[in-house]
Image 1: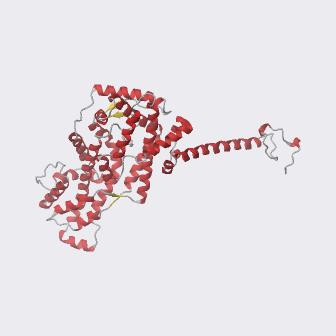
Image 2: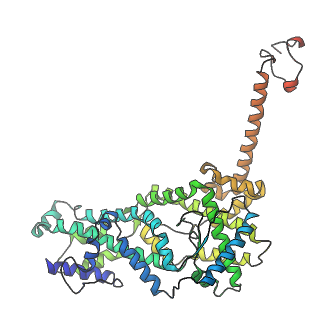
Image 3: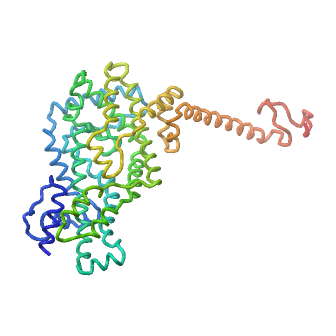
Length: 459
């Protein structure tokens, strides 16, 4: 049995060569790869070994370049940029400023500060993967059971082992994705997901500097423009109290319903040969974490992508209005942000594989055009008022026809005014002193018509 466990450990080490595995030299079944999963019962239940996730993310960050803690000068520069950004935003949106302070984060701090939200977002799909791995052994028919009869007790041993090792593998891949993403983000909300509590502006000086490299723009303009976007998002998430919860709930709903194609896993386990476990690793490595999207999942994904696009589109419109009088470089910086979002990066590919979720909205430009149309028709206050209730938010179809959405809203408001006026006339006609048996005329409540007027009830 010890030889079998060591070979299993060696197999998974081959699958994930970049992961350090203490005890890999062979100190028994509880060491190394499996030991890191089995040592934490919570990891098996949640589907993610979060201790390993944090450790891998921090090591990935350290391997991708210097990550110094922000110094006093960087903190001061960010505070000044946010202060000016808030003044500019006051003239572009009716939503009030909410920031009580400005945090300058390193990449490692971003990992630590955002990990609680990632736990909420990722655990549903990770648990689904863990269930699939554990249940694969029991999915065979009578022939499979007969084939395993010669390995009495092995199934009972492998099922919890597969679950815990799945939590370890998922935690390792998730940690790599978080580590890579930490090198790309410039703030706490710039991927569209609210990864910290509303009202707390946080920016990453190291990544802001990297963002500005190669651009023909000053460091001051780059920092100020990115601060404008972060502050605008914080205002929105703080004002629309329902928005943060709805975005997170949509992600949870999408992840919870994901199904995992276990055919490769079932086939590999069904053909398990203790003398050739390297083959198991080769089979599992190809498609273990590829979620399958059902029609319901696609519908949820469309709602989520639309919501993320609306958030970023609103930010685009507000920041454009706020920066236009003061920053000539704003247009070029906005286009740089759009291109970066459109092309994505290795980290986004990692999360698309793990969760099936594209972090960047695909219809940002359409959403920005819609908010600009609403602003032109109703003013900045009317544009911001749409966020007061989720029922007022545009849908996917409205992104295709922004003028239709604006027109429908105006029509609805007009119809409401007409209804109120008609109701007022009706109440006036029915009030004491009016002729309740006679028809209402166009002269209104001051009309002299009444019993003395001689008007016929049939008229």
